[in-house]
Structure formats: C-alpha cells, structure tokens
Image (tube, rainbow, N blue to C red; front, side, top):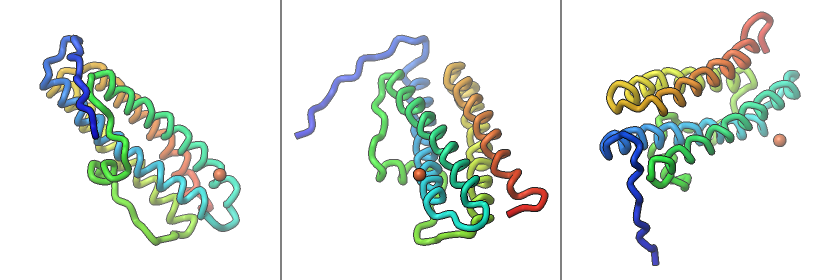
Amino acid sequence: MATKIKHIKVNDGLTSEQQSGVVELLKYVLADQHVLYMRMRNYHWNITGPQFQPLHALIENQYDQIAAAIDDTAERIRQYGAFAPGTLKEMLELARLDEEPGVVPSAREMVANLVADHEAVIRQLREDTKTAGDTYGDISVEDYFTGLVQDHQKMAWLLRAHLEGEGI
Ligand SMILES: [Fe+2]
C-alpha cells in the first residue's frame, strides 16, 4: 500500500503558488530531456554510413550531458519540496517533444532531427525562462534554464556543422 508522505514547506521567499509554478515548468523540462535522451540512445545505436564512428561518439557525448542535466532537473524539483516524476509513462504525458517509434532515419536525417530537437528545446526554454522570472519571480530556475539554453545551443551547433559544407 502506498504511504502518504508529508511535504515540508520550503521557506525560500517564494509563495506556494510560485513554487508549484516553477515545479511544473521543471517537470515539463525533465520530460523533454527524457524524450531527447531516448532518441539519442536510439540514434547512437542505429546510425549507419561512412560517418558512423564520429557521429556515434558525438551522440554518446551529448546523451551523457543530457543524463547529467536530467539529474539536475529532477533534484531541483526536490529542492522545492515536491517529488519528481519517475516513470516513463509520466514523462511521455508531460513531454512537449514527440517520439517517432518504428522509424530508422538516414544518418543525415538523424542529425537534422537532433538539431531540430535541440532548437525546439531552446525555443521552449526561452519561454520557460521568461515564465520562471516574470510570472513566478524565481531567479534560481530562471538562471538554471538560461544555462540549459546555452548547453543546447552548443550541442545543436556541433551537430549542425555536420550538415554544412560537404555534409554527410
Ligand atoms: Fe554505446
């Protein structure tokens, strides 16, 4: 039987409404990170062609970064006194990114899809950053999301460069 655990109110200068507002934003971001992480594992395994080795390694490097960010996001939710969602079912319900089951794209399409995902995450995080600051008055999550935007910009560039010049 599930036990009801009592939350202790975190006294950090935000109201309960402000805290639950930023927790909600963090949950959406956590879910998007999971969808992107899974897609990267998928592409790391299934990529083919002459650029296999560098792209296989680059994607691994990026999903390692996303894995670290996932942990940061979930632990931030805990710092506001809330519990982090911890099932794939909840991640899919919350995520704003879509999955594409049963499809194995070409290497070029995989790289283009990952660039598009990073860019979608960046656009969404720009809005979430504004909401965290303007609507919920939380400089902490505003700053955290700003850092994530910078990380995704770099990851997007490292992939986008494979599509430029001679291409793959
Ligand atoms: Fe591997």
